[in-house]
Length: 246
Image 1: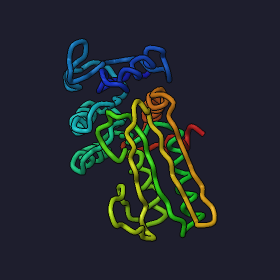
Image 2: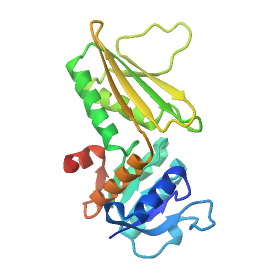
Image 3: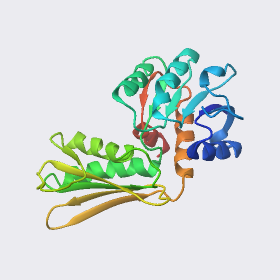
Image 4: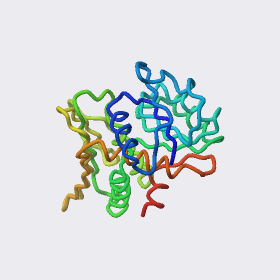
């Protein structure tokens, strides 16, 4: 069994993950459940000294540096699933990758990972096309645009280095050729939808991924945790995982 320390155990994703771990998905068992709210949970990962194989962090981006430091102190691989990391927080996580295996992704869905690769392919095949990204999430989501939308833009920028991100539009703002618009919708209980529009003027291609429930993110996190066990120190992503899952 893969013994998991789960940080953010009381949150929406943490609750789903605890259920799936209880069901033995990916051969996982719960070593410790951690959440700052306390109660039935440990309040900090640093309070746990027992046996574990991997850490999964589904908490808040502000906790990422402390989780990464704990992973290094325990020599444990860590899966960082939180979004909205500041440059300083991201740097702390990347630094941990010099000592332990670190998995980072703004979205833990394999389907979204495929969407990223398809978006890059479309941008390559149609180098002069206009590209726009649209994302939709529930009305309680804190950050905008979503980490996944930013991940999509960053992936397209790999094949279009001149691309410039524009978050929404208002007023007099004629579109430039290098611009990629990123638009955020916040509606009801929407779990997550991402679209990439590619338009040449003669034809339009729309790539779309919709999350029907949160199980896909929890299963992806467990797949990432399983993938990390036994790996050398470094930074790993969904692209690495996809190469093994396929």
